[in-house]
Length: 268
Image: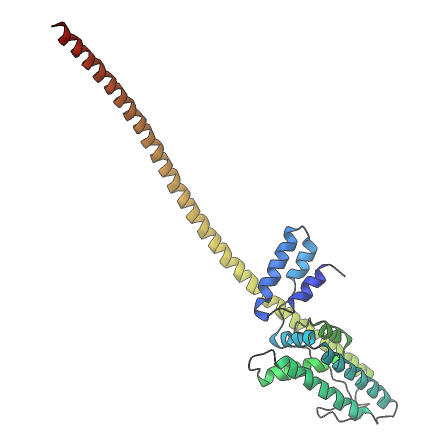
Protein backbone atom coordinates (compact mmCIF):
# COMPACT_ATOMS: atom_id res chain seq x y z
CA UNK A 1 0.00 0.00 0.00
CA UNK A 2 1.54 3.39 -0.95
CA UNK A 3 2.31 5.64 1.95
CA UNK A 4 -0.04 8.23 0.48
CA UNK A 5 -3.11 5.98 0.96
CA UNK A 6 -3.41 7.16 4.56
CA UNK A 7 -3.20 10.78 3.43
CA UNK A 8 -5.93 10.26 0.85
CA UNK A 9 -8.26 8.37 3.18
CA UNK A 10 -7.88 11.03 5.87
CA UNK A 11 -9.18 13.65 3.43
CA UNK A 12 -12.56 11.91 3.18
CA UNK A 13 -13.10 12.25 6.91
CA UNK A 14 -12.79 16.06 6.82
CA UNK A 15 -15.65 18.55 6.54
CA UNK A 16 -16.57 18.77 2.87
CA UNK A 17 -15.69 22.47 2.63
CA UNK A 18 -12.12 21.75 3.79
CA UNK A 19 -11.41 18.95 1.32
CA UNK A 20 -9.79 20.92 -1.53
CA UNK A 21 -7.61 23.15 0.66
CA UNK A 22 -6.43 20.21 2.79
CA UNK A 23 -5.73 18.07 -0.29
CA UNK A 24 -3.69 20.78 -2.01
CA UNK A 25 -1.77 21.63 1.17
CA UNK A 26 -0.83 17.99 1.79
CA UNK A 27 0.21 17.51 -1.84
CA UNK A 28 2.42 20.60 -1.56
CA UNK A 29 4.04 19.23 1.61
CA UNK A 30 4.77 15.91 -0.07
CA UNK A 31 6.26 17.62 -3.13
CA UNK A 32 8.46 19.79 -0.92
CA UNK A 33 9.68 16.60 0.78
CA UNK A 34 10.61 15.11 -2.58
CA UNK A 35 7.78 12.54 -2.48
CA UNK A 36 6.48 13.41 -5.92
CA UNK A 37 4.53 10.19 -6.62
CA UNK A 38 2.71 10.40 -3.30
CA UNK A 39 2.03 14.10 -3.89
CA UNK A 40 0.50 13.25 -7.27
CA UNK A 41 -1.69 10.56 -5.70
CA UNK A 42 -2.98 12.99 -3.07
CA UNK A 43 -3.53 15.75 -5.64
CA UNK A 44 -5.58 13.33 -7.77
CA UNK A 45 -8.04 12.68 -4.92
CA UNK A 46 -11.49 13.85 -6.03
CA UNK A 47 -13.84 15.81 -3.83
CA UNK A 48 -16.83 13.58 -2.96
CA UNK A 49 -20.41 14.38 -3.83
CA UNK A 50 -22.54 15.62 -0.95
CA UNK A 51 -24.35 12.30 -0.60
CA UNK A 52 -21.09 10.31 -0.80
CA UNK A 53 -19.51 12.57 1.82
CA UNK A 54 -22.42 12.05 4.22
CA UNK A 55 -22.20 8.27 3.76
CA UNK A 56 -18.45 8.41 4.43
CA UNK A 57 -19.09 10.19 7.72
CA UNK A 58 -21.71 7.61 8.70
CA UNK A 59 -19.31 4.76 7.85
CA UNK A 60 -16.52 6.30 9.90
CA UNK A 61 -18.61 7.13 12.94
CA UNK A 62 -21.01 4.17 12.88
CA UNK A 63 -18.99 1.27 11.44
CA UNK A 64 -21.20 -1.27 13.20
CA UNK A 65 -24.23 -0.13 11.19
CA UNK A 66 -22.30 -0.39 7.93
CA UNK A 67 -21.07 -3.86 8.93
CA UNK A 68 -24.70 -4.99 9.44
CA UNK A 69 -25.66 -3.49 6.09
CA UNK A 70 -22.93 -5.36 4.22
CA UNK A 71 -23.79 -8.57 6.06
CA UNK A 72 -27.43 -8.11 5.03
CA UNK A 73 -26.23 -7.70 1.44
CA UNK A 74 -24.33 -10.98 1.64
CA UNK A 75 -27.37 -12.69 3.17
CA UNK A 76 -29.55 -11.50 0.30
CA UNK A 77 -26.99 -12.75 -2.23
CA UNK A 78 -27.06 -16.16 -0.52
CA UNK A 79 -30.86 -16.16 -0.57
CA UNK A 80 -30.83 -15.34 -4.27
CA UNK A 81 -28.51 -18.24 -5.04
CA UNK A 82 -30.77 -20.52 -3.04
CA UNK A 83 -33.78 -19.21 -4.98
CA UNK A 84 -32.06 -20.03 -8.28
CA UNK A 85 -31.76 -23.57 -7.01
CA UNK A 86 -35.45 -23.68 -6.22
CA UNK A 87 -35.52 -22.63 -2.56
CA UNK A 88 -36.95 -19.10 -2.35
CA UNK A 89 -38.19 -19.43 1.25
CA UNK A 90 -35.71 -16.96 2.71
CA UNK A 91 -35.58 -14.46 -0.15
CA UNK A 92 -38.35 -12.14 1.01
CA UNK A 93 -36.98 -11.96 4.56
CA UNK A 94 -33.43 -11.30 3.31
CA UNK A 95 -34.66 -8.49 1.06
CA UNK A 96 -36.60 -6.97 3.94
CA UNK A 97 -33.52 -7.20 6.17
CA UNK A 98 -31.38 -5.37 3.66
CA UNK A 99 -34.05 -2.68 3.28
CA UNK A 100 -34.04 -2.07 7.02
CA UNK A 101 -30.26 -1.75 7.16
CA UNK A 102 -30.23 0.58 4.16
CA UNK A 103 -32.77 2.79 5.92
CA UNK A 104 -30.75 2.77 9.13
CA UNK A 105 -27.47 3.86 7.51
CA UNK A 106 -29.22 6.37 5.23
CA UNK A 107 -30.73 8.04 8.29
CA UNK A 108 -27.33 8.11 9.96
CA UNK A 109 -25.86 9.80 6.88
CA UNK A 110 -28.73 12.27 6.58
CA UNK A 111 -27.90 13.41 10.09
CA UNK A 112 -24.66 14.90 8.77
CA UNK A 113 -26.53 17.11 6.30
CA UNK A 114 -28.43 20.29 7.01
CA UNK A 115 -32.01 19.83 5.82
CA UNK A 116 -31.27 17.01 3.35
CA UNK A 117 -33.58 16.97 0.34
CA UNK A 118 -35.58 13.82 -0.49
CA UNK A 119 -33.44 13.40 -3.61
CA UNK A 120 -30.32 13.31 -1.45
CA UNK A 121 -31.84 10.58 0.72
CA UNK A 122 -32.82 8.63 -2.39
CA UNK A 123 -29.28 8.85 -3.76
CA UNK A 124 -27.82 7.70 -0.46
CA UNK A 125 -30.20 4.73 -0.30
CA UNK A 126 -29.38 3.79 -3.90
CA UNK A 127 -25.65 4.02 -3.18
CA UNK A 128 -26.01 1.82 -0.11
CA UNK A 129 -27.88 -0.83 -2.10
CA UNK A 130 -25.20 -0.69 -4.79
CA UNK A 131 -22.42 -1.05 -2.21
CA UNK A 132 -24.19 -4.00 -0.58
CA UNK A 133 -24.28 -5.78 -3.94
CA UNK A 134 -20.73 -5.09 -5.09
CA UNK A 135 -17.39 -5.94 -3.46
CA UNK A 136 -15.64 -2.80 -4.68
CA UNK A 137 -18.48 -0.55 -3.55
CA UNK A 138 -18.63 -2.40 -0.22
CA UNK A 139 -14.92 -1.77 0.35
CA UNK A 140 -15.25 1.94 -0.47
CA UNK A 141 -18.19 2.31 1.90
CA UNK A 142 -16.50 0.29 4.65
CA UNK A 143 -13.40 2.53 4.47
CA UNK A 144 -15.48 5.72 4.18
CA UNK A 145 -13.85 6.85 0.93
CA UNK A 146 -16.80 7.03 -1.47
CA UNK A 147 -16.30 9.70 -4.14
CA UNK A 148 -19.57 9.67 -6.02
CA UNK A 149 -23.04 8.17 -5.88
CA UNK A 150 -23.10 4.53 -6.92
CA UNK A 151 -25.58 3.19 -9.42
CA UNK A 152 -27.29 0.07 -8.11
CA UNK A 153 -27.08 -2.75 -10.61
CA UNK A 154 -29.92 -4.44 -8.73
CA UNK A 155 -29.91 -7.71 -6.84
CA UNK A 156 -31.95 -9.12 -9.71
CA UNK A 157 -34.47 -11.04 -7.62
CA UNK A 158 -36.15 -8.27 -5.67
CA UNK A 159 -38.60 -5.60 -6.62
CA UNK A 160 -38.60 -2.13 -5.10
CA UNK A 161 -40.90 -3.45 -2.41
CA UNK A 162 -38.46 -6.26 -1.62
CA UNK A 163 -40.67 -9.04 -2.99
CA UNK A 164 -39.33 -11.90 -5.09
CA UNK A 165 -39.76 -11.96 -8.84
CA UNK A 166 -39.02 -14.73 -11.31
CA UNK A 167 -35.27 -15.48 -11.19
CA UNK A 168 -34.81 -16.39 -14.82
CA UNK A 169 -35.83 -13.10 -16.39
CA UNK A 170 -32.21 -12.16 -17.22
CA UNK A 171 -29.87 -14.41 -19.15
CA UNK A 172 -26.15 -14.54 -18.56
CA UNK A 173 -25.53 -12.73 -21.83
CA UNK A 174 -28.09 -10.08 -20.85
CA UNK A 175 -26.38 -9.59 -17.51
CA UNK A 176 -23.03 -9.33 -19.25
CA UNK A 177 -24.35 -6.75 -21.69
CA UNK A 178 -25.92 -4.79 -18.87
CA UNK A 179 -22.64 -4.85 -16.96
CA UNK A 180 -20.77 -3.70 -20.05
CA UNK A 181 -23.29 -0.92 -20.62
CA UNK A 182 -22.97 0.17 -17.00
CA UNK A 183 -19.19 0.19 -17.34
CA UNK A 184 -19.41 2.29 -20.50
CA UNK A 185 -21.77 4.74 -18.81
CA UNK A 186 -19.49 4.96 -15.79
CA UNK A 187 -16.56 5.70 -18.11
CA UNK A 188 -18.60 8.40 -19.83
CA UNK A 189 -19.44 10.00 -16.49
CA UNK A 190 -15.80 9.90 -15.52
CA UNK A 191 -14.82 11.46 -18.86
CA UNK A 192 -17.37 14.26 -18.42
CA UNK A 193 -16.15 14.89 -14.90
CA UNK A 194 -12.50 14.90 -16.05
CA UNK A 195 -13.29 17.29 -18.91
CA UNK A 196 -15.15 19.62 -16.55
CA UNK A 197 -12.23 19.56 -14.12
CA UNK A 198 -9.80 20.24 -16.98
CA UNK A 199 -11.90 23.19 -18.19
CA UNK A 200 -12.03 24.60 -14.68
CA UNK A 201 -8.27 24.13 -14.25
CA UNK A 202 -7.58 25.88 -17.56
CA UNK A 203 -9.80 28.79 -16.51
CA UNK A 204 -7.99 29.08 -13.18
CA UNK A 205 -4.63 28.89 -14.95
CA UNK A 206 -5.65 31.67 -17.37
CA UNK A 207 -6.78 33.93 -14.54
CA UNK A 208 -3.62 33.32 -12.54
CA UNK A 209 -1.48 34.02 -15.62
CA UNK A 210 -3.28 37.35 -16.08
CA UNK A 211 -2.71 38.23 -12.43
CA UNK A 212 0.95 37.24 -12.75
CA UNK A 213 1.40 39.47 -15.81
CA UNK A 214 -0.28 42.39 -14.02
CA UNK A 215 1.94 41.84 -10.99
CA UNK A 216 5.01 41.71 -13.25
CA UNK A 217 4.01 45.00 -14.86
CA UNK A 218 3.51 46.59 -11.46
CA UNK A 219 6.87 45.23 -10.31
CA UNK A 220 8.58 46.66 -13.43
CA UNK A 221 7.00 50.05 -12.82
CA UNK A 222 8.02 50.01 -9.17
CA UNK A 223 11.55 48.94 -10.15
CA UNK A 224 11.79 51.76 -12.69
CA UNK A 225 10.57 54.29 -10.14
CA UNK A 226 13.02 52.96 -7.58
CA UNK A 227 15.90 53.33 -10.06
CA UNK A 228 14.89 56.94 -10.79
CA UNK A 229 14.71 57.74 -7.08
CA UNK A 230 18.07 56.06 -6.51
CA UNK A 231 19.63 58.20 -9.25
CA UNK A 232 18.11 61.35 -7.76
CA UNK A 233 19.39 60.36 -4.33
CA UNK A 234 22.90 59.80 -5.67
CA UNK A 235 22.77 63.19 -7.44
CA UNK A 236 21.57 64.91 -4.28
CA UNK A 237 24.32 63.19 -2.29
CA UNK A 238 26.91 64.51 -4.77
CA UNK A 239 25.52 68.01 -4.51
CA UNK A 240 25.60 67.77 -0.72
CA UNK A 241 29.25 66.72 -0.75
CA UNK A 242 30.17 69.61 -3.10
CA UNK A 243 28.28 72.06 -0.89
CA UNK A 244 30.06 70.68 2.17
CA UNK A 245 33.46 71.16 0.52
CA UNK A 246 32.57 74.74 -0.47
CA UNK A 247 31.44 75.45 3.08
CA UNK A 248 34.69 74.08 4.47
CA UNK A 249 36.75 76.14 1.99
CA UNK A 250 34.79 79.27 2.88
CA UNK A 251 35.32 78.64 6.58
CA UNK A 252 39.03 78.23 5.94
CA UNK A 253 39.26 81.53 4.01
CA UNK A 254 37.25 83.29 6.73
CA UNK A 255 39.62 82.03 9.40
CA UNK A 256 42.64 83.18 7.40
CA UNK A 257 41.10 86.62 6.79
CA UNK A 258 40.30 87.09 10.46
CA UNK A 259 43.81 86.09 11.43
CA UNK A 260 45.36 88.57 8.95
CA UNK A 261 43.09 91.35 10.13
CA UNK A 262 44.04 90.73 13.76
CA UNK A 263 47.75 90.82 12.97
CA UNK A 264 47.41 94.11 11.07
CA UNK A 265 45.58 95.73 13.96
CA UNK A 266 48.24 94.69 16.43
CA UNK A 267 50.99 96.16 14.28
CA UNK A 268 49.42 99.62 14.34
